[in-house]
Amino acid sequence: MAWKIPLFKIYWDEEDVGMVSDAIKAGMNWATGPNVGKFEELIASYVCTKYALTFNSGTSALHAALLAHDIKKGDEVIVPSFTFIATANAPLFVGAKTVFADIEEETFGLDPEDVKEKITEKTRAEIADDHNLILIEDAAESLGARIGDEKHENLLYLYKKHPHEKMGRILRGEGA
Image: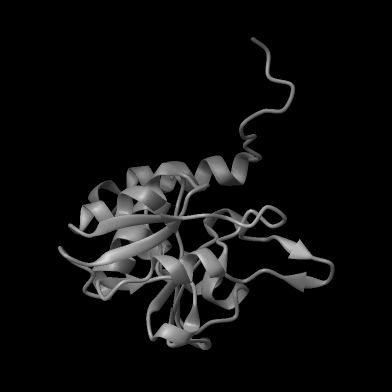
């Protein structure tokens, strides 16, 4: 079967190939070497934040976000019912229970009213900011996206209590 619209397309030039080759030749430090720090600084500047952390995947970033907030066995995390499997699996990685909430027909985003109905005393992370819970916004595929003249700066964003109290941005690499 020939794809009419490819799943992805890689754009590269010889400078890119040289940089990848140099990173591989650096030996054991290719995943933690100086280029990673430089990349994180560039991304932090691009998305207008003081710090940025990179991960090998969005799955790892979600897992780390849950660990950072001490989400554990017995806790519940509300996730959209229309999502990538990593979103549903991340709570399981830390022993928490995944609770699916419905999405809005128009936006395909979480339906805040359905989320409110799913909240229990065990819920630790969700979308509504009026329940003193953590909101983890996974927008890993949005780097570089714009709506009109406005740049979308969130990749994986953590909020506590109120969306204007930004806790930080976490970036992810290739994959899910």
